[in-house]
Length: 84
Image 1: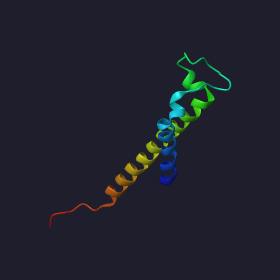
Image 2 (image 1 turned 45 degrees about the vertical axis):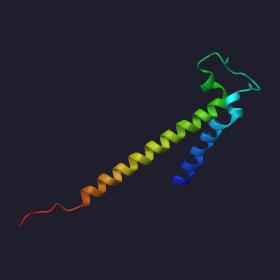
Image 3 (image 1 turned 90 degrees about the vertical axis):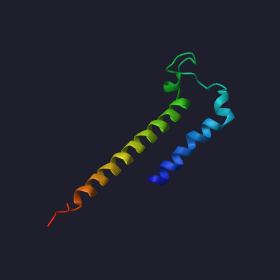
Image 4 (image 1 turned 60 degrees about the vertical axis):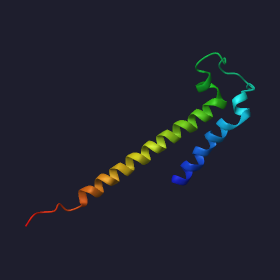
């Protein structure tokens, strides 16, 4: 699972550093006008990157939550030291 997140994280980083992605040459079929704030969510080309970003965020949240739960579970299993 970690390896999948590493590969998925590299895709948006490469897309952001690519000159073609920053130039924004246009779309084959414009669903929403570029002036609209909804353009980056509803246009299929942008929605793909937004979806990958949201999936990464959800994946990191799930991984962090599972790690914290495992850590708490491990702390509960350790015996308490008692004075004698």
